[in-house]
Amino acid sequence: MAASARSSFRERYRHTFNKRPEHGWCIIFGYPIGRLLVLLIAPVGWIRPNALTLLGFGCKMSAAAGLLSARSTAGLAASLALLQAGSILDCMDGTLARLRGTSSEIGALADKVGDIVALFVLGAVVGVRACRESGEPLWIAVGCAGGFAHLLRVYTFWVMRFLTHERVDEAALTGLAPIPAWGEIGREWLRGWPHMLRFRESDQYFFVAVFVLAADFRWAAAVFSGTLVFGCCWRLGEHFLALRRRRGA
Image: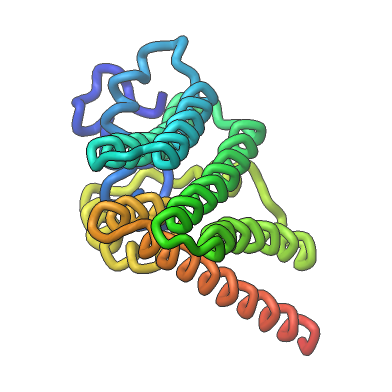
């Protein structure tokens, strides 16, 4: 581990800042909570990062099943809380691996695949529930469109890496980053709030919970898919412009 076991808790916590997250929810809530939990479980050797990845995926799948079948506000709230727990575990697996120096490409791949599947399933479930509320089957397509847009965005990201011959090393896959000073940590947390408005992957789990509890599943499906489709189109436009600039160079 980068920080000695004899270091102060404050210093050991600082050494868990071994990645610079981009998603607002992760910056504000997910990583601050997840890093504290990682410090508690880090000495327990049998708890492996890949086990946390599987547990996080299981939480999200269980939450999706709960949302599909819940008939009460309490049931919805429990499922949505489980969804947030899955997101926190997503922040923990890589943090633990980097802290122990055991990051791997296989772990990174499993994490990314799980994220894509979980987000698509969530969109489909929200769409089905919106269909039940409205009686309009179109909502199922709306919910699935968000998951498809996210999949397309991820796919084209790696296609661009291939087309531009951009090298991807292990640090890029695992997110390893230098340990920041406390001042930078505070500034990063403040910058996380406007990042929430980007509606990135982890932010979606939070906003689905907000709109399900504050409004209904139709609002949740519309915001979920609308923001993901917009983000995908924006990124595709950036990719095409980048390729045209390379061609004209």
